[in-house]
Structure formats: structure tokens, C-alpha cells
Amino acid sequence: MKKILLLAIMAACINQAGLAQKLIIGSKVPDFKGVKWQSTAPVQGKAKLVEFYSATNPTSAKLYSNLAGIQSKYSNIEIIVLYREDNPEMSQLASRDGSKYLFGYDANGTTYDALGVKFLPFTMLIDSKGNLLWQGNLSNINDQVLQKTQ
Image (cartoon, rainbow, N blue to C red; front, side, top):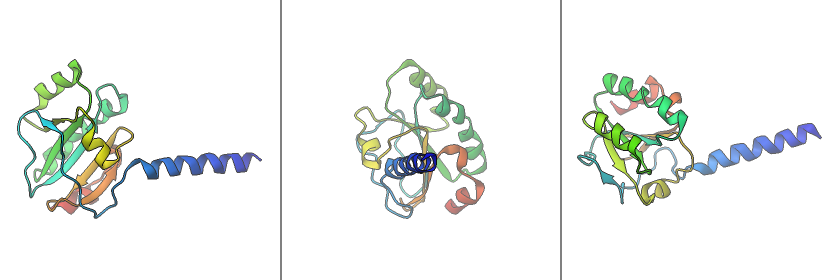
């Protein structure tokens, strides 16, 4: 009985993670419609690392510092921080790091919904042609994946 219960719980968790995002690796990533950019919009024809971020999510905040390491090693990748919350923490972060990363405010959740983002932290790596190379938790991305953008 315990094995059946454990298997049912594991299947539910796997199913939820699989349903969390809509895109398949290699598929075209939709435009970021409805996003209000803090400074400039993303450049077409450039690889992008998109971090779906929440200042109130402790794991998002903890992993945020990983973006600097990626940026210093992969200057060809444009780093985008997308957020849905309008609060002082996000305003401060965007003011402080707005020269390093692109910050986009998705107030209505249009982009989050279009991409099927249901949990945070969540990261997407997009090639220069707009195709999804990788998706998951920022702590799991590695050099082998990031080198695919070069």
C-alpha cells in the first residue's frame, strides 16, 4: 500500500512539472507581448537567457546572483529578468541592475501565460533564431548548454 501511495505521489509531481511549461525544446518562443521594458527591449537575432523572477520568492532571490557569472562568461547572451509584481524590491533591483540586464514588467501575466510559466524560479535559454534551447531552474543550467548559443 505504501508503494502504491508513493508511486501515485511521484506520478503527480512528475505530471505537474511536465504541465508547468508549454514549450518544447527546439520550438519557437512567442514574442514578449504585453511586457513593459524598463529601458530598452530585447534585440532580435541575439541569444537570450530569460529569468522569470519574483523578489518575494526566496529561491529566485538566491539564484539571481548566478546571472552575473553567466553574463561575464557569455557576453553574446542577452539576460532578461521578467517579473509580474510591482513592488519596491523590484523597483530597486531594476534601478540597481538595469544597466546590466533587461528588466521587463509583465503586469497582466500575458507572457507568463503564453509561455505556460506556472512556478518560479524558472529560466529559459533562447537561441539567436528565437528557438528554445533549454528550460528549467537556473541552478541546473551548465556550460554545455550555454555554449550552444555560440
